[in-house]
Length: 416
Image 1 (cartoon, rainbow, N blue to C red):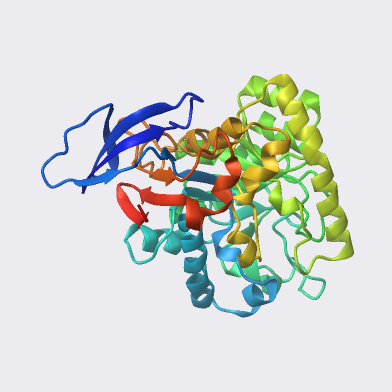
Image 2 (cartoon, rainbow, N blue to C red; image 1 turned 120 degrees about the horizontal axis):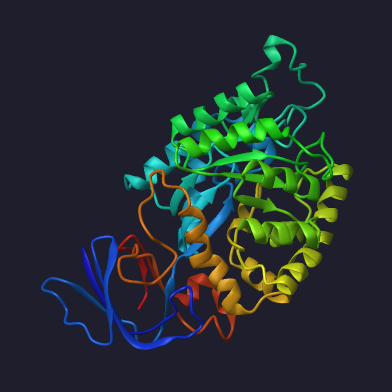
């Protein structure tokens, strides 16, 4: 496939400066040339952008593609039904401009394969596979009625564990085995739960999960496979333990102090935060879960204020939405929620080149450079009606304002 896009105003994902009146040649799945004028190769499809804003596809760094239905539906249906609904979720992502996503807890291996082979629509998936948790940690979703983990029947009784979305283990040896199992299945990076969460029932946000030795075991196993570990954690102590263990990315981090963020900056870690998911109470939350959710929301302002103060900019974009397919249809509202702390340029960089750089840290099944408009990069391209650097709200209406969506050189939408 060869496509030539002419007369475009390019935002490359890294620089605030727009390159006006440019042409972009796409050959196969990559951008082969960017110049003021390019002669159309024989047989190429030519698209006149008409001066529209050309930018990289969005990169989501904290998604849950297999969990976009009610909790009751997840708990009572088999994997085939869940997978069928997941294809609706992936289509919604792609049609809103998200061309690459890192799934941070969920058995998305077959879903990824189906998209890669062209059987269904969706973004390029970089799966963590099951989130790895300790007993009584963020991934231990047992209710009181479930058997104790000391009962043989209880070890695999919990639904999310049985489905391959979560893994509950204790001790360095079992952590090693759990990590290696996700790598065997095709995980591009590993996710640990290193602290309490709002969606789990048995761990306050201040709880620290996994010992240093357990975390180090996970990091060593991932490093041996040329990839990295990211950790779900809100609190200072958990973040610092994760840093000491060699983790490369903190998921959430809402309750961290300035001192801890300075340490993250010194150690060159990434921060993967979300805003929209905390602006509402997920359906089915207990009063205690609701309290934790509000606590997490209250910490966002301090976290981002610190980031701006100290110049911490290794920040990416993501949703963390679960059990809410209607909100998946409004993913791009996250950009507007971040305007309280960041400029449109900073937000677009978080959602494009920053995300591509973070995911690119994994050398497993790495398809190449993405999240940027540059020669040699994967051709993940959006043409936008309007200039998001002036008004980022134009992105919240993707049906009207995303005139073209291209992933890997293939056009999935063109209303020019």
